[in-house]
Amino acid sequence: IEYIRSMYYNKVEYVRFSSSLGKFVGFTEYGLKNAEHWNNDAALLAQLNADKERYCLNNVDIEHQTI
Image 1: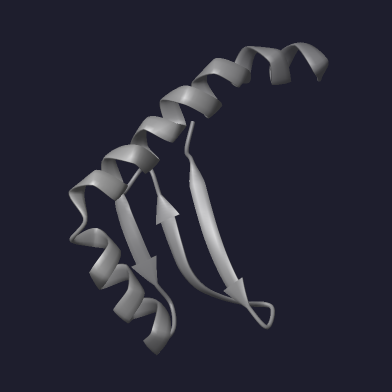
Image 2: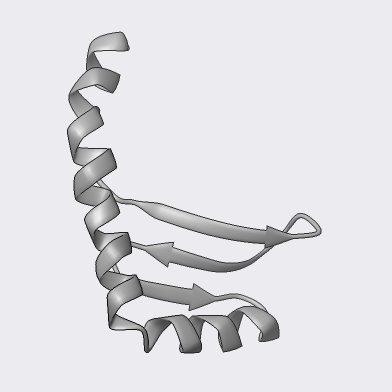
């Protein structure tokens, strides 16, 4: 299970959080700056990693049952 949070502007993805990497990755100049800033925030990274546990792992069984 991987939790991904992507951010877009004008249909272009500029930054993404990946729980498998445990950090943000920037794809544009603006995204790189934001990723660097957000990756230095340990509380934000901990919260997003906890979101994987809270949302993904709790709902994976429900999703598999509906398929």
